[in-house]
Length: 187
Picture 1 (cartoon, one colour):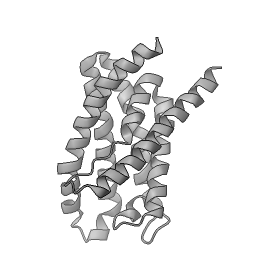
Picture 2 (cartoon, helix red, strand yellow):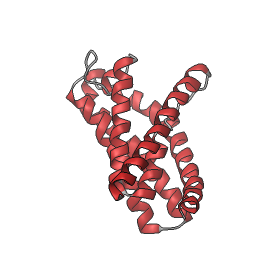
Picture 3 (cartoon, helix red, strand yellow):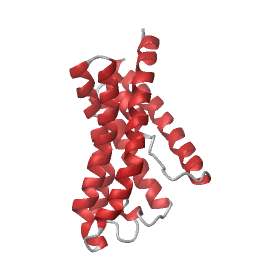
Picture 4 (spheres, helix red, strand yellow):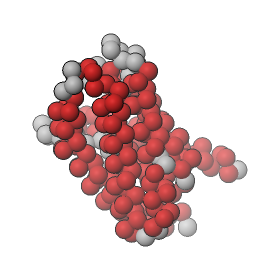
């Protein structure tokens, strides 16, 4: 019974992730906004806090798979960073696409477990988002720096300054808002 409920939890959160991914892709591509924050990681953070790091890690892995599939099917100048199946992609692309996303499902749980209060929810949401940013951009910096003849710092600085700050704030606020409501509904 317990195993089935974990599968159901994963399925529900994965469905939410797919809807968020599709909606955000459409919205951010149609609207001329200067930033395009990732929001698909928020269900991973929330599931990690509610159901533990194993469920979070599985959802993070599924998020990584979404990234690989999306970057394989929709070719952008940066697709090779997340998919080994496109020109210039490599096994390093899988590391960048998968490892940070799996870690998103682990770190918020332990942060919230250590604090267990409203501030802990804000910090856990922030840490989950920062985990993605730090490990994705760090992976790109260390594994793909030679692609830009050493000038990858400019690309990373643009991403870091705009998107990551918006993602961090959105993740913190939504985590602190949604978790209490879901915990009430669980009871």
